Image 1 (cartoon, rainbow over the protein chains, first blue to last red):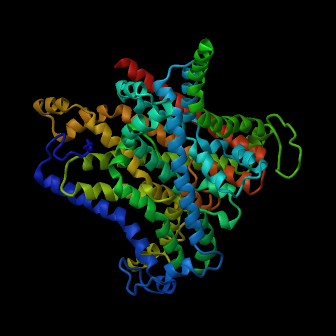
Image 2: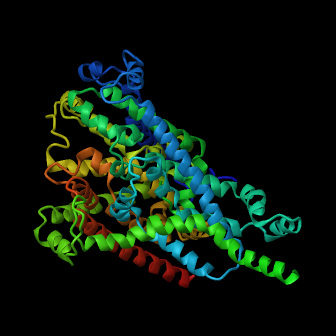
Image 3: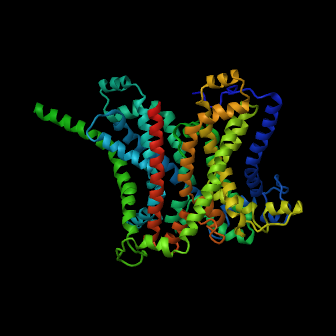
Length: 291
Length: 299
């Protein structure tokens, strides 16, 4: 699939060369300045806290050191970063896996089976697209509290794995797959379940990838919900532990370890973005999904 | 025997779709629809999470918010200020970046990667990064201010420029969304319109005003409403920079809700704020849907 949004030479009108040059300089300056804070945080993470406060700021560390990274993995005042990293990974990967599984199961009958109530169920799911999840956080918190599931993986994973958007997206995609392929499989004696995973899902990789990427970004970066439901530091995810560290370290100018944790927390999403930029752009452009 | 197995097949055929839908629907009802309705119920009660009973108080929570809550109107004001600063600037900048990225300039892959990259960084890191750079004592912004002979500022401590800073950081963090949506919108404008404009002797600037902008009307409508809805739910990017301060300058509605609900455990009042946010977002969504309906009917 060629990325249709950026084919070069698709200029809407010709701008004279000098003006193009000015525009190029302008956009290049903007692009570089967008990167500066990111370079700065990486550079800072390889600088000791004392140097960060006493030396003048520099985009390239003058005395590079990995001490901050060693510190956040071994010695720390409250807790090391290993467990939060593991928690974030467990939560994100489970959320992605469950979202893809549950959404494709729900999307399949809505796309391909005729049954009573299918219209009603579809409208019910469309309604979910309009509900901002934050407004039910209070009662969702009370619900998990009443069953004693605060500070567990379940409370972090389950609410994120229910995606009306995912069902909608996959349903639309499943409908574009020729029905004949499915009929052939059914004649060969495949049941519905087998048809789903041997015919439909392999043909839906682009849609599954798109949903998977945005679910991962949303889950890895999720902040307010984990902040509400987590009180035990053992269960905290990276963004939450970072906000706690911040309170403890920034006041005493211990910026080094904070910056190291920030870099660790950013690497997975940046990698996903760089690897799947095309799907990321297409996902936003065609569906208006937010990360 | 034969009829038996046939009716079994029929029953199986009938329940199959529901078996597929069951995991989603059950979780969906329990974790999204039920809490939404539950939230309305909680908003009519008074509850601190400690006492076993939750007395029904009617509209008292709403009355408290509107009439006696010292911070509710401040948070409405902060939310509106956030919207007024955030939405128009992100529309203009997002459109400008999209037009520039759409020119097929040399190095465009680098340009767009750099501009989109901040979008995937999580709000905690964004907050910490700018909190560090703006730190009044050790931050580099004040360092460069001193170098340039300017007086160092009490960034994020003095309320004067706090909301402007929050919005600047938000633009850096999330401009990718508007830019991408506008890029898609630009691709949707038929080439012939530009050719026709050129034949009529339009300069690039004129064709921008008379072809591009009208062609992006629906896109802009979509972006504006998405941004306004998003602004009513804004939390992480503001919380980490300012915690709603200084002096409530950035205490937007979600922050007010979080403070009341999870600092003071006044669940009824917090739920009432959630109801207010829900109603505002619902109205905006319905407006958006009816606008899309209209344009769809036109076509």
